[in-house]
Amino acid sequence: MKPPPFDYVAPTSVEEVLDLLSDAQDGASVLAGGQSLMPLLNMRFARPELIIDINRVDGLDGIVVSDDAVSVGATVRLATIESHPEIASALPVLASATTFVAHPQIRARTTIGGTLSHADPSAELPTVAVALNATINLRSKTGSRSLSAEEFFESTFTTLKEPDELLVSVDFPREPGMSFVYDEISRRQGDFPFAGLCLGVSVRDGVVANARAAAAGVSEIPQRLPALEAALVGRTIAEATEDAANAAADEVNPPTDIHGTAAYRRGLLRSLVRRNLSALDQEQK
Image (cartoon, rainbow, N blue to C red):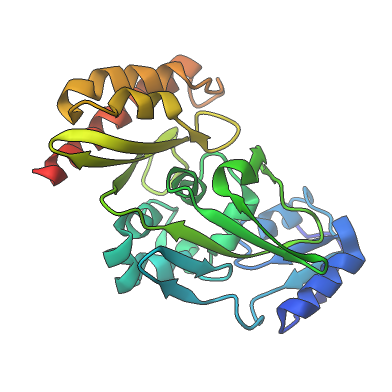
């Protein structure tokens, strides 16, 4: 397997990247970790005229932890997120969800910007980004804009990022009192999940005051689950669990494929809701 012919450049500044993207329009692909792009090239599913390697670009590999958010640059590796002590303290679910991604060798190369831009609906970090209401920051020669993760993902492997735009960073907000967990069900450790769930709640006086949830593998995008959230608010976790599990299953329309039927994935999602809520309930005690 060999990739098609392409030109290769390795700029060192964001401005250079934006110039190249503007000139190439949809004829360029950005190379960061290469864990998705390189297989696509080798199988000739992707045929860009130009590869722009952003690994040497200054200013894309920073991590800033503040009282309000955890901001992560586009070329930060998932292995760095996994082992970063400040992230583990400020937003534990971000570090713990990363451990589900493939294997250590893959996480050592995969970047946060790459996995978000690739937009695999079964991937862990896009699902966490939607659940946490993360902000995706984009730049082009004509300016900057920010999108919520929920609006960023358009369909399978497709986002609202324009061909001349570069994803430069993502901001994961820290909401006081919210506790999140991520869990998934896959055939083997490191496989893409049949279903995954990132679920967070804030509890006051024993009652759920707020909830956020998103699921992986049950839609063409990482799907927000508002019916599940509504089933939790105003009740204790214990009394709301079954209604929340059923609400989540009812609001998704999973694909039926060689890995399982839609009904099978709905059943997995119910199980994940129960598991995640049990973990959150124990955390409150």
